[in-house]
Length: 221
Length: 221
DNA sequence: CATTAGTCATCCAATTATGAGCCATATATA
DNA sequence: TATATATGGCTCATAATTGGATGACTAATG
Image (tube, rainbow over all chains, first blue to last red; front, side):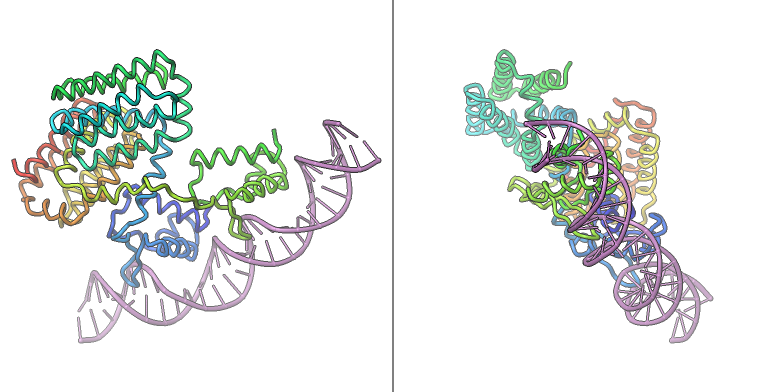
């Protein structure tokens, strides 16, 4: 404890969390030293690390500031997302995806509906679990694409990378029986049917039900 | 138990699970030895294995670090998020923030509530617009943090970086009058009050109303 | 008996941490 | 304008930390 490396990691995480937004000033070196009960030289070494990483800029007489252009944040975001628990994942999916489906019902083009339909069919037709997982992820992503919201699409893509983590795959494998597969397939089709009918409420409800089922099966009811 | 192979496998799994991210420093050999109640030489043998596998790098006087690994191409998340339109952004916020507030009402600790309250006060007390924006972003992030879902937190942090884009700031500046500020402040307080009362539905409704107002004002009603 | 792995103890070399002081620049105050 | 204060930049001597390496001893195994 108390090493410059630990402090650097600490501050880096705090910046990621938004403790100080871009352009904001950090506490002074002397304050950080006193607060963390380490020598000022150690603080300076940590700040130097972060400055070399481009996370901070420092000015004599003014202070230390979070860099305007925080490029590496993207890596950190997804890296920490991958550590989210399956419970977290299902919770956010339950928040985002039904709403996304409702938007998609209103906005999907004919081609997009066709893409969704194909992904739905391919999921059901997949012969092994990895193939099934891939098509399942594509199905959900296709719906978010049809919602035509750039942030929703990126969110779903991020979710899909999380879904490919080991822990998640193991959990899913453990519970996926043949009859459960058929249930999931039927739920997918229900979602697609509502989208095709431009039934926003129906699409929302169908996807909501699907994720609820997933959650119950995977996390235990 | 206690063999160097077991420890190596152990540490390897912990790295996979994200106990230490790439570039982060592991505990010292002496600490690992004491913690696992094995001899330091045994720890060294395990670390040597992992070093040979390329999972770790070691430096005299500095410590043991998780090796940097190639980051998949799918992780260019927020770079593309920054291209999202204000309409997209508000649409997504309307989807997840009210739900996050509902979760926060149930899960927030006393300290987290205090952090939210302070952010709320600082937003109202901010003297200039940049300061106000910073505290406003912090207010919303603090609520998501209280919801205790890692993905929600990351997503909100990403949203906050998007919010700092020029286009977004200009849009907000253009419409932000003094009376509108007071309305926003009052809405913030309503959200906090509901959170404090552990009123999930109230918090959801209050934040929903707030973002609806934002959307109407910023995008034009 | 030979082999292998673990424990304990000790020393070494590289790096970091501490504490103190002084400098240069920027900002606030009189 | 002139002075005072705050802040980052820098140096130095000393202490503490940390991985690297070795040797003596023990226990289990074939």
